[in-house]
Length: 169
Image 1: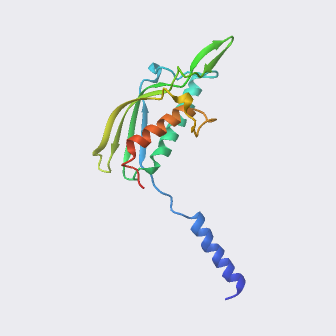
Image 2: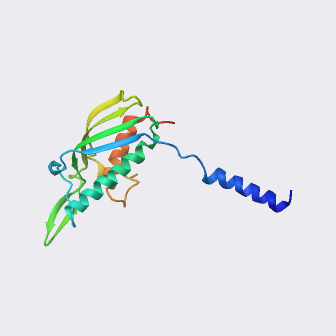
Image 3: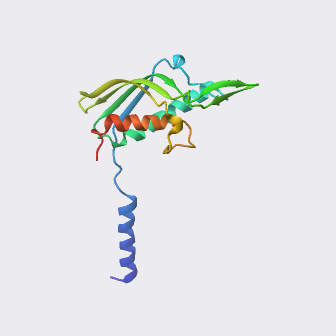
């Protein structure tokens, strides 16, 4: 076997080991937004209300799905969101509306969730009302400059506290 053929085989094996890893499957996630017109505060600071709502729901669904990647693939996480109060509050500033973030306007979520096994038996269910009244003093916030950062941090903490015994190690 020539030296160049050996190198080619070695590179191919390494490539396969690095880039062709099997993708870990995650639990299915179903998020329902119940009566969003009645949510406490999901208003855009500026821009289209409907566009903001759609992108916010999509962003939060994507974040929850990422959190659920640690749950076993044969499980399903079902979440029915009944209220959201985003961090900050929308105020009129002349012609524009601005979201002002102060510690008195903390993020909150109200929802009910179920963690289901493959045969649809309920593993865990609970009605939640989560909030972070100290969100402004959180120094380890990993979503500092991201959209919905305070809300994502709150969901991270809830997920960790709720599912620590169900997440695959």
